[in-house]
Image (cartoon, rainbow, N blue to C red; front, side, top):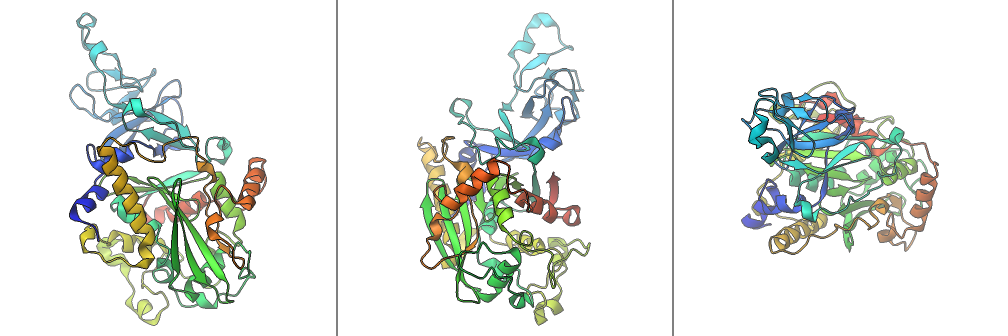
Length: 460
């Protein structure tokens, strides 16, 4: 369990907090290109790290993220006019450019020089892969942009999205990296009886459908974690029905990127809401092409989690069906899409971590927390944060799931030294492997309007 002090450091990310100061030293996903698609298009509200901003694209196509409130009387610039390379407050006509400079003050005499002295809060932005990224830290310490494989992605392949989860970012992050819970939280009658499609064999990058069979067969995976230059790599190792070992890979890239698949960017909106981002990179696209039958196999016979159009959330106890829970049809008794179960488990989990008791299955969580806490405290002492160098190979951080060969070292899988993954990357960069559903596409299926009462989807 954590001390009260460490728990508070982890969960608070607003201005002036230790964790907020740390996260502000990195480029973070802020909004989608599609939300401000064209010059002089409608501005949008963006809340991130407990700060209220307005995003807009000016006449020249440049993107600005500035304080939502006009520095004159505080009127919201969300209602402003986006025109002639600036956002104009409709209260008194003052206009500001993407850098926060006041460029017109028509309601004041030019002779007083007031306009030239006025500058409002603005943050640098970078557009990549359909996402507007923002840097909110000290401008004289701004690092280069870390490319996770989106910089050279053609515009026609951009696919990104997010959904808002009603919980603290640590709850969302910890749920994302938990490898044991699918064997329990998502369990359903019949998963163990899924027909073998041939991928329970050494060397096979298994199908999504077989993933569910493996989860049902071995409900106590061995969790292993190794430190890396970007944070850590981990695996949930399960025995398969045919006596092989299946490795489900996870990665943590400091400070907000974690999970299986291509990873998820977990960004605090404030201390009670989180945006969970997914986007296409070379690695998500490769992973999708290696999966037979669709990512996680969401369309096979017996699949129990089809959407039924009903809203499930904390207020209605996720419409839990105790009969289904009792007879094992659905282990939790929570129907609809299986992310209903994830939301229930993570939203109701502890925010007061002085009360928890962790086990060996929580090794990844323990390691991630310690890295974050150490970095936040070090930064407060003037020690620079880790993993800022943009020249490091962020675009080579992959997480393929695989049935291991006898004696195979899982720590190499998907890493920058994995020869098979490097070969696939080269083929992707040359335009090959166009089949498969990318992970961001699946995120948008999960986060559709069907779940809008607790997930607010944006994307495509």
